[in-house]
Length: 271
Image (cartoon, rainbow, N blue to C red; front, side, top):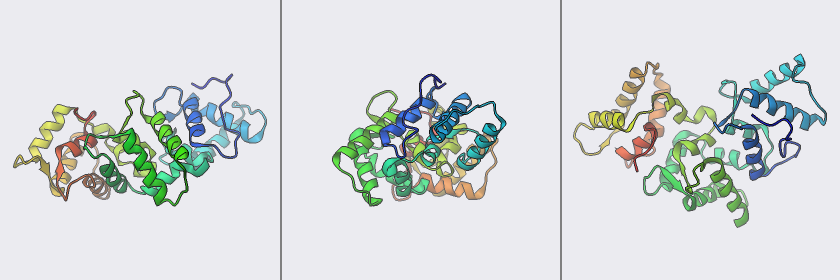
């Protein structure tokens, strides 16, 4: 939980830099689980109100609760009662908002997967730090954002600080996808159906009938339907098509190899 005695950094600013945005995020996501929720959320809204009003507020006051409810209705896009990083980017005015810039660059999960495939050149399921800088450079160019090497370095380091929790200088697919708008982050839909390596190998082998190491689009659809049914999840035809298209963006001319699908469906890519 955020420490009440320690004032949150930068909330008073009219505009904050990428690194200041991250400082705010880390201050309130005190347990590092990727969300501002519970008491963290109350502390965030209280300090945000104080910064904007220039005066103290009383969290026990009914009007505080009502304003907080209105605030969540506006910004909690997926209505899960907590704030995630992409939602916070809508709340705070960030200098050259590189998070929103990212979302303009990859407006859909299919575009995100296609961009990922271009930069995950060794198909490892990770983007290395040097690949990330190229990724962000292309992002900024496509969004017609002017930047210098120093700013690019700041953005790169900020993204690494966000997601490279073990300090190995590389980022995983599911971590980077947290920058997508909530409704577009199809990887979140698979959180409840993640497979162990053994389970993944068994299901991939079942659908790779000829043993050539890849499956096609129709086989992928059957695999996804099977996964959902086994996990007692309802299958929406429209959503299923969207998930399929997003995953197929990783394919090589319609051939989805084991390593690509593993990135999406497995808890940890095999080393």
